[in-house]
Image 1 (cartoon, helix red, strand yellow):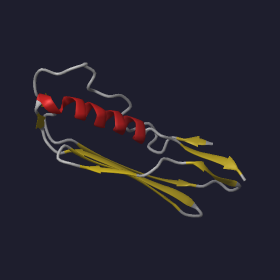
Image 2 (cartoon, one colour):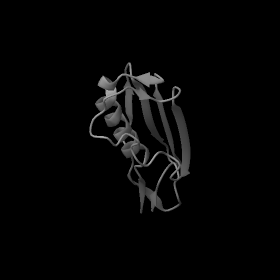
Image 3 (spheres, helix red, strand yellow):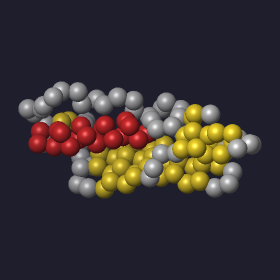
Length: 115
């Protein structure tokens, strides 16, 4: 059984597509998103793979993805916050890489196999 924890509600593609940027990145306002999912482990199944935890907190973004597993369920929390509403063009490549991490991490799957 393969499950997308946030049911395809998370961002699925990087909005920063240009190879370079010559003007500031205007986010309009400070963007943040929070997701939480609890997946009950089906009877007769066990976790085969799950996303790894990650936390990044610097002057540009805060990104946290936490997976907590017990005998009955998998709790997954994902949060990201862009700390500024306007970024200088010099931050473009870093922001583009953070968006790539968000897209990749928030779309990882949880895989269960029969015991």
